[in-house]
Every structure is written in structure tokens, then in C-alpha cells.
Length: 441
Image (tube, rainbow, N blue to C red; front, side, top):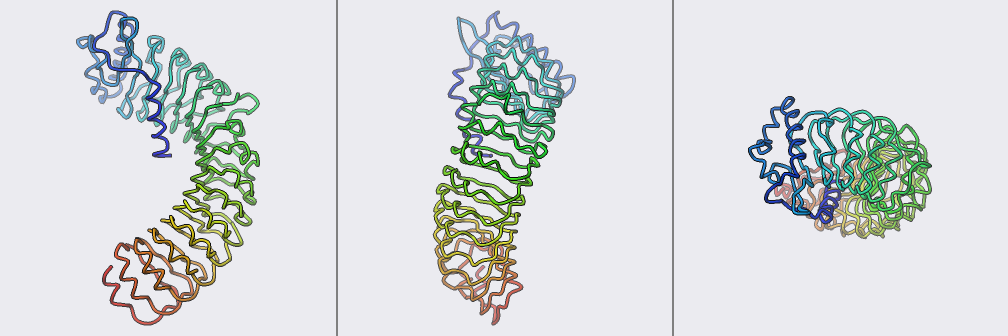
């Protein structure tokens, strides 16, 4: 999620036409009183709220310079438009804040604190809110249906709390929301699709680390403009709904890892032609990796490790010219390494460990000159270790060829791998002397 998420966060500022006002007027007194009352409750529970020294009656005329406060001017007066207090080590129940005092609030960010209790239904009074971040706190209880009244909301982040119960179907009223993160709440359940309106502009959706049982949260199939979908760690099983591959064709990042999906991976995966990241690791997928995987021409990361894929690595994988990370380790693949793999010349990480691959290394692997990590251990690969491969892949930092059936001597070209930090050649049939060039590493 990382850079992808914050690139989008940066965009939200384009729709917040606010600036620091120079002074306040009597029309802001209600806001001042609400903030100071809230501060007093914070002070009772956390000494860290002393960082809000600027929040005081003696500093009344500088309200718009109080820590975390942003104002917008309108009608000759200034009004609080943003409250930004992320990672401020604050702790209190949120119902200590009078939401009705902030009719002009467009941004409310208290992520990364220790706020607890439930989200008050009164949050619905923030009718102009565009950005709401309550992530990484200790909120509990259910998500109030009143949150669906925030019709202007564009960004909603409730990640990493302790919410429980069914996500209210009223969340479907948020027709302008493009970012929605409900991940890492453990006990949230997905809403009924029949009650959720389409979220037409939703692009980023995370429901990760919630216990959905086995029921796929099918309301997402109506979110046709999704580019990011994270359903990792949701205890989902069975097969992936076929309609996911036909309804969500704009996906760029798809994370289905750490579930219990089983059966073959549908050839319809090739319909997701915009995919850049595909994470399928730690499931129970079986059968062959579909040939249609080669249709994902923009793919940069493919991780299908810790499954039960069988058969061969499809030669079509050579069509993935943008691929940087390929991990198919801990499966049941039993074929040679396809020559076409050498066409993935942007690979930096290649991990095929713990399969039943056999045969010699294809000469095309010497084209993988950007490799930083190569792990082919715990297979049945044989033949000599090619000096040509070693001399071309000089950026390698980690190389593991152990537990195979490689023969012959260790090429002196290993001395060219001056970036190498990890080298494992054990449990093979290598013979001869250790070349002194190893001392260059």
C-alpha cells in the first residue's frame, strides 16, 4: 500500500482550497470554546496534550495558527476548515468533541493516536467533510450508519482499530469517496451487496485483516473503477468469483494473499490487463499457472508462493517485460525453467525455491543482468553453473543454488560478484577447488 496510498493522499489537497487566516473574529468563538473543551478532556488523560500549548484563550486572535488548525476565510470572517493532529499521542473518547461547532470542517485527521470508544453518530454534522482519517487508534464498537450522511466525503480511513459488526450499507451513499480503508479491524463483516449502492469513483479499497468467514465481500464487484484492492488475510476460501476478472478490469494492484482460496486460478486473470502488482501467496491454489498470465503486460510484481501450483512455468511469462519481482517458491512445479524467462530483463528478484524443477539453467538467464536476488534452492536442477551467467549478473547481492544437483567446478567468475552478500552452493555435486577469486567478495 505504501507510496501508492500517499501519492493519492497528495491529490486530496487539490480539492481543499484553504489557507491560514491571520486573525479570528467573534464568529469563531463557538469553535474556540469547542476546541478548548476538547483540549481539557485530553489533558485529563494524557500529559502529551501539553503539546497543544498554542490552544489557549490568551492566544485567541491566533486561532488559525494553533497547532493542527487550518482556517478558510469567507464572508469577512475566518472559520476552522481543518483539524490535523496525526501521531500526536492523544487519548480520549471522541464524543468529547462537539462536531456541531464545525460546520465548515473539510478535513479531520487524528490518525495514529490512542482515541478510543465508538465513533459518535454526531459526526454526521460534519456535512462539508472531504477527508476523514481515524486510522491506527483503538476505536471499537460498530461503524455508525450516520457516516453515510457525509455525502461530500472523498477519503475515509478507518484502518487498524477494533471495529466490529457489519459495515453499514449506508457507506454506499458516499458517492464521491475514492479512498476507503477498513483494514486490520479483525471483526468487521462485509455489507450485503443488495443494499449497497455502487461506489462509482472508488479507486482504493482495503478490507485486509478482517474475518469475513468464507463469504466473499461481493459488494466490491460493483466498484468498477477500482485500481487498488486489498483482501489479504480475510479467511476467504473457495474460488475467486469469476466476475472479479470481468468487472474490475481497471485494477492495478490486487492482493488476495494469506487466505484459503483453492482450486485452479482462472484463465480469466488475463482480463486484468492493467495489473502491476498481483499477490496470491499463502493460499491453496492448485493446477497449472494459466498461460493467460502473459497477457498482464504491465505486471511488475507477481508473488504466488506458498500454494500448490503444479506443472510447468508457462513460457508466456516471457511476455512480462516489466516484471521486476517473480516469486513462485514453495509450490509443486515440476518442469524445466523456460527459456522465455530470460526475456524478463527487468527482473531484480527471482525466487523459485522449494519446487521440483529439473534440467539445466537456460542460457537465456544470462540476460537477467538486473538481478539482485536469485534463489533456485531445493529443486532438482543439474548441469554446470555457467560462467557466462555469473559474469553477466554482477549486480547480484544474494545467490542461493543449494540443494540441487549442479556439477562441475565453481567458476572463477564468481569473483566478479563484488556486491554479493549471501552465497549458498551447498548440497550439490560440485567438485574441484574453491577458486581464489572468491576472496574478491
